[in-house]
Image (spheres, rainbow, N blue to C red):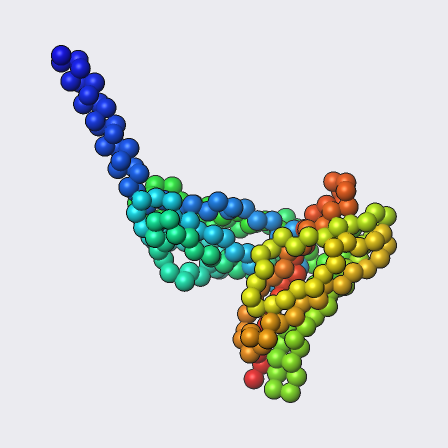
Length: 236
């Protein structure tokens, strides 16, 4: 009889622990990795993640550590209700780095033992127009607006330096601030144009975004990504 009581007591304790754990807040970032591919030096690139609250209590973000001032993660609010989600942008200034680089922010949540991690990587290059197999020029979309002049669109020329057709796919999420026109592929030794246009409703707004495109020539050495920084600057 005493043994049965102990067994039931253990089961009860385990049940309470399970219920307690289930009632805790839990923030998850299902797709927490993003590779920008080739990125120009001294530019800002952006990517948006979805923060999801999968616990029974509200997930309250208490701190974010990015490791340096070159990376910022502004929040529209510091909490996410149970079952809800929030889109969060990460802004990374590549500064004067060259070569393989990465940023790995920590997201701390009240009541959650382990911090969530984000993983961002890039190959920072000084001369994107010399990258192979696909080079680009210009390598930034500067959409400036002055009193007498407004640059509302920029065309980036992509050159396929290989002897194979290379397919192009947009991998960054669509943004409201700009529109994109781009080809599906570039023939061997040919060029293609990516045109970035300011959306009319954002013509008078400043913003910093980026466009990440994957390329694939059908073999491993002809596959990768590149990112075009996009900036709207209002000059008074």
